[in-house]
Length: 416
Image (cartoon, rainbow, N blue to C red):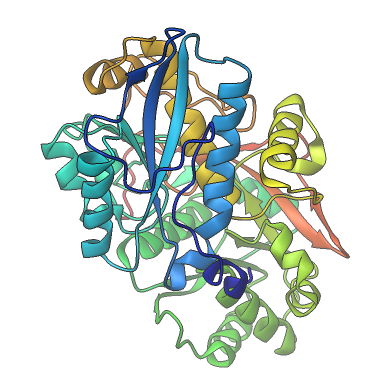
């Protein structure tokens, strides 16, 4: 993904319905117009500056804005219009906490969308203040604890035991894979996900011949790791790393003369990769995961998302931007809660309402998510499902078609 484009775009706020408000004023939320329509404020915090902005930034805001504008224009929530306000999550736990406080105290946001990577350090404030938060929950364990009742994981509450699972190893086997090597950063979530995938491969009878769950972020010796993979004789590689590092690793493995039958890479599914000639060339043959229905399948849910992003964000490319999923799906989840709560929604009634939604599949774009349960979802797999795509020429070819791989946790296992 091109971080330069995102970092150079000045973003003060995203506003729905023509109401510009970066900070808002006390009492400005939940107003009622002359026609009886109630305006409800939703806040979003996402990295607009710093390294993480390359994976979120303007694309995340555009997608949240598009989903909310679609709801407003189609009267999806009778008697309710939504105003979206924005704060930069920044580059640390402190800046995340400050953004959350500004959204709650200055902007009077009824609900906050946490579409970023530092909410793990700021969530306690939301819990203490009973602020409803809908998060991507890819950064830490906070969404897996039942005591954090006001926090919702868009793609399902994560199992903090990081159980081994069935489903993906069987896919590796169908691709001709016979042995597994796993790589991850030396950080809690990536390493736990890496261990879970290795444990899953072993449980399925795939020998795990090499693992490195202590790879330094931004300073890895890919040639050395590739040599270790070659010496181990692996033909499947799972990488719990950022896309740029995954492509660098994949390139090093190919340069070492290793022929892989299958790979697992997250975050590579996005138009940005195809638009970058060097990345596209390096990624040829790479097998990547898509936690949501691939756009190539053109289902009704895909068409709805495509049309909204074209209308409200000017996006007319064959595939989504990688950052779209964080904004679109957190906003879509919040809308599901607002619809359930009704016009007289409060923070408390929103939480109670969304906790009764047990089968939200985001218009068929994910497997159903049950917001009444905690600790039931493998963190990397929205709704315990994933689709797999392969980079082929200038396209992402869906290997799994319309039907995702279903992830089935193995009881009694633990990889945290």
